[in-house]
Length: 227
Ligand SMILES: [Zn+2]
Image (cartoon, rainbow, N blue to C red; front, side, top):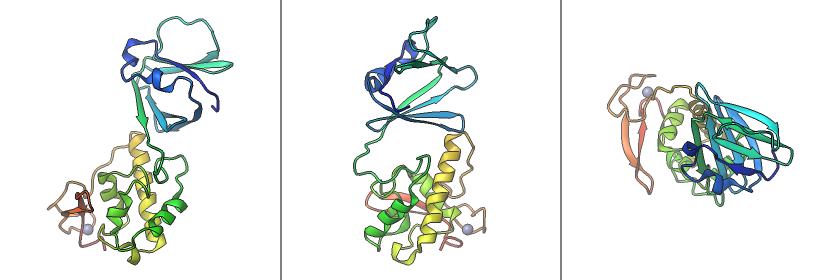
């Protein structure tokens, strides 16, 4: 970590997406295990996700050690090289890092800055609309918005002005926890997302759905227990 690395994808199956061309020569900023995934972050906002499933493996050898076979990925630093064999999951994500809020999936999400961002904008905005704003917090999608608000018992329509810092933090932490769990392979049973008209698993109330925000993305919530 911390070095500019040479990146190759010798296995033809790993060459889809041009990973080597995009990452070669970039600095490897961090490597983090999230569940069974390995997230490799490169400068420029690139995140490579590797999942080994049953047969994949990593090896770490001195730079230039003999290579037999075709690994999916080779990351070559000044002294060592890491090789990933048998894939089968190698996905490159690009984050437009400029103007984005703190990453909800960061190893240590910056909840303080997310909160400051929430407080620096229009306080008449509904919580559900605000947490989907990628300039405030990056990474929360429509499903996790709905599920995190349900977990925190907060209505997506509650204006920020009527919401305490503690309540906002609870929602953000719930979203981060659920999303990391999901990324790590934990199954998540939806409580309200796409459950319009069905009973709330907490209180039995009828789950509602309505478009919210400029993008009119559907908010799902239980009007009986999310206030
Ligand atoms: Zn309910």
